[in-house]
Image (cartoon, rainbow over all chains, first blue to last red; front, side):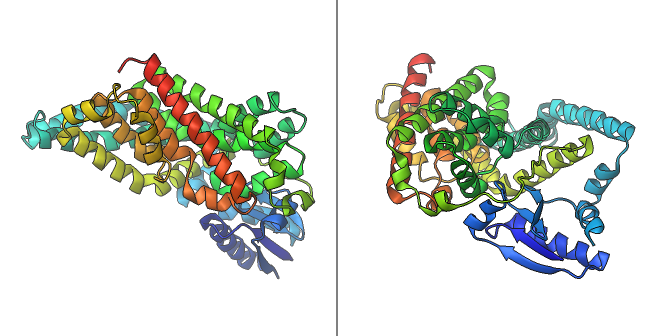
Length: 79
Length: 351
């Protein structure tokens, strides 16, 4: 599973990455993480509010930092 | 956070009961605020509330609590209402609009769309690459910070409906007119070319879609937490300065130098406000204290607009997509608009 965190490096992006990493570890997922900071690339995913969470090229969340349990609910069926 | 997890799992009955209890607690605190400080400072601590020190301290404590309560209540309500709107929906609405009508729609949507100027760059790219005219996009970007929920909440709480509605009307007008003028100047020349080369891939996720009430309430709580965490230093400094002005600043001096007779007061206030980076929460306590000292509302609102609408960090962000020429014109047009509004208000509202 390839997880991308979209955002220019704001506090929210760091929070989202931390939550996503924790969720992946707890679910025992084999996930690689990548930060996408380039604005053109971020906009390319259709994101207009950062941060964004992309899993295997599919945008799952944009514009807010979901809670840890919400991220787990999103990632669990994709494992 | 434990509270968020509980909201996430709440049943319908727990949710509405929680909301009602929270609303009653808010109302009780808001009503008790003034009598409480009068009692604590006046009766218990024995301060004379008519002295400079007494009124300054009273202003600081009473105002801090009042503003925090107002912010909490209004940010929560506004965020829950706004969760029915999204930047994606706004873009879809603006996509088919021509300039003119588009500027009006963009300014209005700038007020109701959940948006933070930290996302100005991806939103700008998203709008322009989807074919929304540049001038219309700029109307949105001007209105969004200028007429925001924090400003509206505080104006309403501190000054009542009149100045609040004037402020909203003026903010919208500036956003519409400035966006329209900039749009007429063929601004496409001054935009970094990569913006037009961006292809919008992927299926846009609409965050406003398929949210439950629990999600919306959770977003409201998160927003209150995030905004308060971000603005509390500004707020304390602002209220501190406000308290100092309240207790110590000589009324005579302000009346002579910044009163309605001084024609240069408005442009001076605006030029002072543009480089100052603060937000409505930091500026309004000062505005309140200065208004008590007899400064005219137009001068004060112009100062506040200049502080919140134009900020150096946002300009640095926008530099990624706009060339310096367009940034300079953006600042220029908005500044002139704010000065004009300041004069108009001073002419309409007697000090």
